[in-house]
Image (cartoon, rainbow, N blue to C red; front, side, top):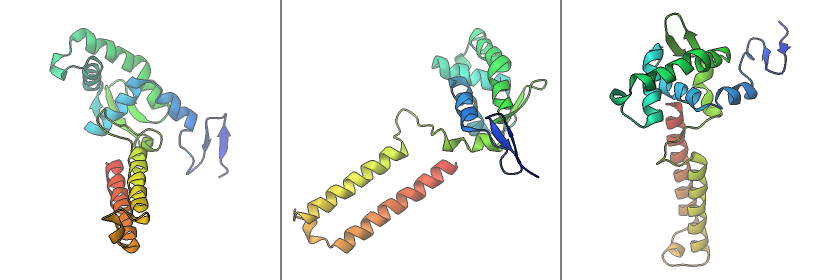
Length: 180
């Protein structure tokens, strides 16, 4: 079967049925849609729209779920039902059954880490972590090279092994955390 191009959006074919970058960025340009994906990642498939709306209202108003008012939940529920969930479903990021009020992830939503790294307020981006680690390793190397005590007494091979282990362990931790 020959793949077909439908507009600029995506190539239709066996391995190419993925949303385009434009579709990804359009779908994720809204905070509520990003929060829906976050909720599904944390709570699994088969989530009720009512539960999603309640949690999103809590996040948006910085409240506990049990403190969310009917009005706050209803405002989010209406926006989800009328706009955000259909847009995510149309792009293929969720399965949405409006009649049953059930939302589930799709494979495309599980692969959004390529486009969006969600970091809480107290965390640093992995890119920043690796730059910091490289700077520390570089400073240790420079300190040893110019003969600063005690760094000059450690062999270059020991530094090479130390740096390789640091980056290797960091890479494994990074891979494990992003797979979750």
